[in-house]
Length: 422
Image (cartoon, one colour):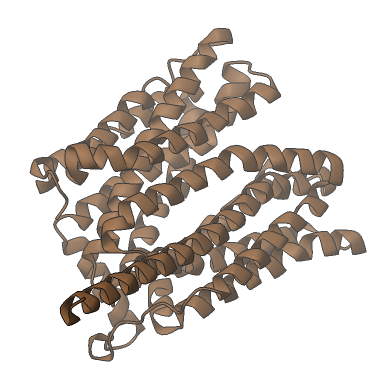
């Protein structure tokens, strides 16, 4: 064997070893995220039930608990990007998991001591929301540091598919736990899930920090403005954020209208309501599985346009649903809309991760989440007001009309001509 051949073999072996290490790191990262998301879905069922059953809370009081989590994005959504950039990423992720675990664990502890009250539930929701903002921004930044650029679409699809699976399994598991253990005790599962996530994340290698010469200059405000300018002035990321904001406005409205529409307009029994709402998770799972093939066949730009048009088309099926077998039309529309939304999310998130300078990525992700996720409570309030004035079915029609904004934004931008987002 020649010297050149031996060197080539050694380099190939080292490359395979590095690839194997990277794969193992990703699966630990995936396990941490999936375990944590499953606990989140359990708490999503358990926390409102604790308020309603144990504390006899009114609908407005339950809304305060729900709104506290979304308030976190408006409070620290933009500074979170700067915070994530300045602190060690892996350590920050572990710390956010521990904070969330301690906050959630305080609920069953207070219930056992007989001192649980509504203010504590609001504070717990707010603390979990604040820590989740930092964690989510860091999570989106962490993935590109452990996954090769060409693998990001597939890995993002897997992450979205796992999230959709937990959306299907989590509420059902939460309902069973609440039935047999009670609402407060069932939240112990979420607390344990955060601890497991922290333990898994602790085993990951430290994420690479941007080079010192490219570190952001100026104070916090200037760093936030730099991230904001990059997002709003970027010819692709800017329109994609506008699309995500329009989509989340509709999603926020659906969160408000779906339970009311199914129960009061369609007369669906409680058991059927859970199954019908779970079709969104099924659609998300199918969309996540189809994204890599769709991107390979049509390009990321083509996939994004098709996803936006698909979500809008299926949104118009929702208000057309009727009682009895007509509820299947709602299930079909809900699954199709969710599939279109998740493809949009995967494609745009992958583009941001691969086309944003590493030193700007945390701030860009925070800016995107601040703008697009801030539309969720706005959509929820707007849908609730429209339902009060014109009725739930008419409000759903208006939401469907609002969904036209997503493909319209794409067709009005340069993305309409792009096969690949670049």
